[in-house]
Length: 162
Ligand code: SME
Image (tube, rainbow, N blue to C red; front, side, top):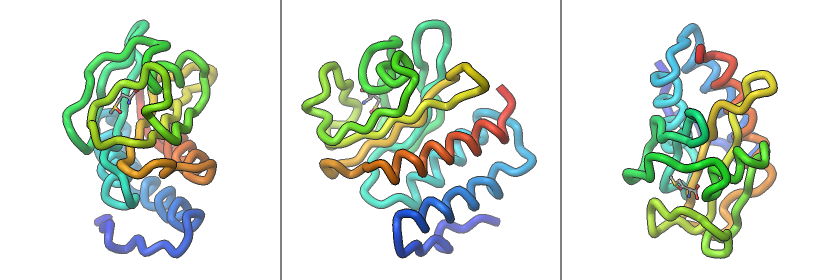
């Protein structure tokens, strides 16, 4: 059975290499969307330093709806184009926010959050939702984090039936 304690990465690249490997094992043979999103959230929250929220929003019609997550209770519905998550959907791209207070329309679910990373989950040419990570540390996320979480989003998508 998976144990978070086995991850003792020396570098960010190594952390994400190990996270990807563990996620593939954790989701292997399991297609259920809620179960896989819940375990992906728990894995990120337990293994990534300086994170206060990690989870999913799924696109339903023209709004994002809260999925499984770890952290404080969060905003349930976010319209496409609103907040960091809705902007990532509208732009079809990951968004790195170094300072959430400087992002127009940022939706604060936890007052402690200072920086944020939102990564779309792609299924073919469609986007079906996002992975959202918040940190209490300013500029917590960089391109390495973005690429690492984009890889986790691909693994989640590949394992899961929608
Ligand atoms: N900050 C997000 C809202 C979701 S919470 O961070 C969990 C946003 O602006 O879209």
